[in-house]
Length: 321
Ligand code: TXA
Ligand code: MG
Image 1 (cartoon, rainbow, N blue to C red):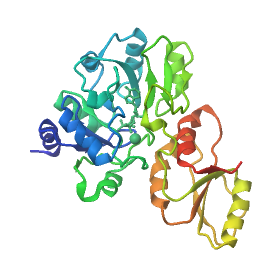
Image 2 (image 1 turned 90 degrees about the vertical axis):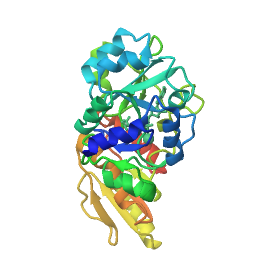
Image 3 (image 1 turned 30 degrees about the vertical axis):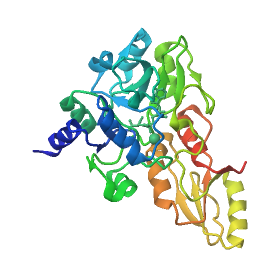
């Protein structure tokens, strides 16, 4: 039996399998099996009322999971699947509460990663999968990251290399009349708006929102070492002060600085958004708990940086300017 068949067999038995996707690695279980889905929450330590995305092979499975599907949802799926777009739709009555958090909606996405796609084709059903990290931690973008998260508790991990997108899928809700952007991600907001011919309402973090999305909680995606964001000059000042009080300082800079304060370490960052997104979580993991503070240059506030800025806002403990 090859590894893919082994994974399918485990999933059919109600076991978990960690899978590569183009965004981040997922912790997958048979979405039709509530006992299997419960194992995801147990391993992640995630509150059980947080809904999970159901991953499917493609458009052909959409009606297996959702009802009252608006034409706009089909158009988006046709344009962006397989790929990093999750659609929130009214659920089919059979979709387990364990998957939807008891809501009457379901999140659906067809990943484009060849290994995830092949697995879904063979499995035939849907795979409920959150990011394969413990609750509140940085999402994994390699098989090793998943091993680092779960250690001896790791399930079978399918190794599909580093995730090429690096941040999670864009989530769009199509359950009422106006389409809403719940989470910026791998598919640019503008591409979705261009296809729909109208603007998306952007739902910023709102703890009282009826729509629960754990990716919307403030402290998500956070490294343990404090991460501070600021302009390069402001970071230099901060570095000098902290070095003077004996702290180990890492500067993460996108632009080349004239001079780095003595004693500070430097990590240069990619200066295009796609590249930055691909590297971000690996960088946060690599540098976590090795310094007293991470001082990162704030990216531009332009559309192509939307998803990165969203994740940084949640990962950072402070904005210096
Ligand atoms: O790229 C991704 O989306 C990755 C890969 C593995 O597919 N998955 C991922 O899953 O990021 P997770 O569980 O870490 O984040 C999914 C987000 C959560 O914030 C969840 O609350 C939200 O999607 N979500 C899922 N179903 C929902 C629903 N019915 N209504 C509103 N939000 C939903
Ligand atoms: Mg997550």
